[in-house]
Image (cartoon, rainbow, N blue to C red; front, side):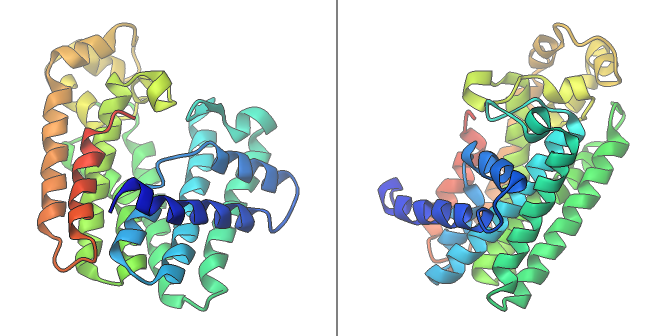
Length: 295
């Protein structure tokens, strides 16, 4: 399946996303639309498309999960006080905390409404379970902040909850097949590790985010934890100390390369779990692409 073949589907997802947000005009509709217009890779809708041939269900579930995902980003930016998302000012930065909080809530509600209006109670359950995992993951992140002694296993548990479970939900929503859900979970973990590497090494113009955000916020990611095991300056910075020049020290430890090796391991587990999927080759290609991306 080529980009040209999947583009009409993703264009239809975009149209329906904006229709869903436009249901109740006003402040939250405007900010919700701005959050959607900031773009994104739309990886989860693509996953849903690749695991089912039922187009209407794929569209409905894609809109639902992308609204939920966007809601989490609006709330994350508020909690983290992030001024930019994909190179654009965030909702709290332009309109304040209360407006951002309400916008995230609105997007959550509209996402679940997409499934509820179609009577898809199983889909509601799948997405609700994923949202519960997201909350648990966020709580773990708060607990681990400025903790360079966070174990690798604890980090992996956190990203499985915060990222992996929503990828799993995408595959389950599209296929209702637990085997493909396992593919999505491993894919999501690989995706997040690669994202954390980019935070240490990516260019702001490419990623749309300011490099070193995790270090400044004290969020213990895999490359930072691996580097902190070898470099006391990195360890001190992750604990809340000075961060100037620390990303160069992280790179010097080889932590970025080791992190990507682990990400490739999860991508490999994802590929090996595919059995009888509608678009097996495309799913395998996606598993490679999430690790090798540059933004």
